[in-house]
Image (cartoon, rainbow, N blue to C red; front, side):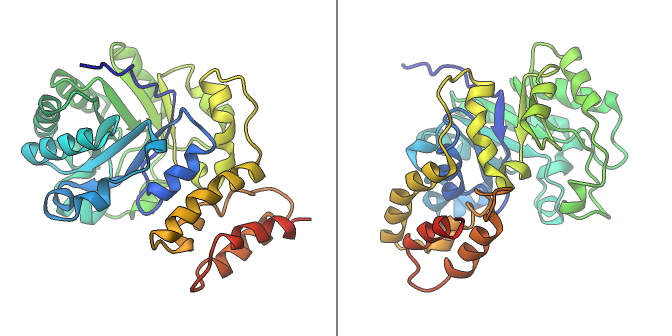
Length: 325
């Protein structure tokens, strides 16, 4: 049996609903070969009762890649974890952090933080089903259940079930009264809480998520914990990923230029178009490639206005380059 090397989670790109689909991840991988990428959250019901291949398929180039699952039934989660392993994912992650009302109604996401024993049962079942790592992504608390002592009970209970890696969004979640967007912005960031977790649980791998907007900031955070997870900034300003391998994984090579990345994407776009995928399904993820550059807004507008047109093809992607000069 082949034993895969441990995953390096020094720098991860967060799972983001409606954003980190397979086209987005392929694009991100053109800039960083080593950052750990995550899928959008997929529910166990969608995999067990829906078109599992549609949700699980990915390009081999996307590895290292983790599948994030939403659910609270241990057996269903074990079944889906095995699907993930069979498809070639490198990790399966349990979502215990999403605060949306729809997720709460399904009894998964952040509301599970008040049920650590159930989460432990879920983790134990998943670990028994697969050899790949099983990790948990959570908040630092929910509603009024936000004391550090309660967080420690949550972490220790799940660690005893075999979870060795916790990805912690350094904000609490309000399960009522705040939208998912507000839950990403209103509750204050508490990096100190996540740092304390690492101090009190040195044997665990602790990854910090929330509010990371630059690589300099990520390097500072890494002085205290094991890894960082960047979300929205990596999506809106994706070219910063081109420096990730050099700064976090010891790669010496110069990163590719923005233009080179666009050229590398063209064959992928051509394959997707032949498979019946609309151009804007891919191009919507690259709108930020020239973020902050002269002509960047013009480039973004050109793609937005033209990639959605019937019959749009890869030539649309070339034209903005000439518009910059």
